[in-house]
Image (cartoon, rainbow, N blue to C red):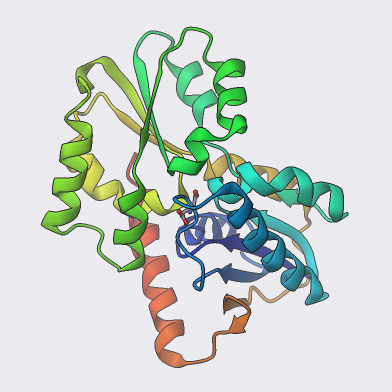
Length: 257
Ligand code: DGL
């Protein structure tokens, strides 16, 4: 049996890399919806359709024991209905507002995500539950998804975009930036350069992986990973090498806090 890790594109590789570190012997199927990325600037209905189609395909493979929605956007629009439809564990991602707010109850936190994640009810519910003091500010960063999908993680264009977006906030008043989109993990190095030392970089992947580890047991598998680009099994050496390179870039970025 394998664990399916799903995202609109390459962002979910950040969750795959953390999951493999914690459960190295498990087999994984990574599914990037390369045909339909980006999700975060589309309508809820469209994204729901894409996620349902991908979930149906993955569950149809017949060897999936848990599905990880390694995408905050997909989780906010589709997790609840998928949990009703399927009886395997469906794990999701949510912006790490809880750890950010509870670690420091005085300073502000900057919650970044896709536009769709930020405007969904799930986001409002998360803030209502954990941020009674109204310490969070929301910042959509949709262009980071475009940059990431082009493999551009630290060019001057990336830096300028982030600098412009961050210039609207007095960063000395913030204790953390929450990366509420898995694609944003590719930009930890760049963000660290731009943010003052008082601002910690937090994402939700560790919580999701901890939850996953409590649900599955690491048994007899071989630690094999297969990749699908929107239902097509990746077999070309060049594309497999691209995935390995992206995982290495992430390994390096995930150490930056
Ligand atoms: N990686 C996804 C997330 O965590 C969304 C990126 C997209 O807009 O497709 O929200």
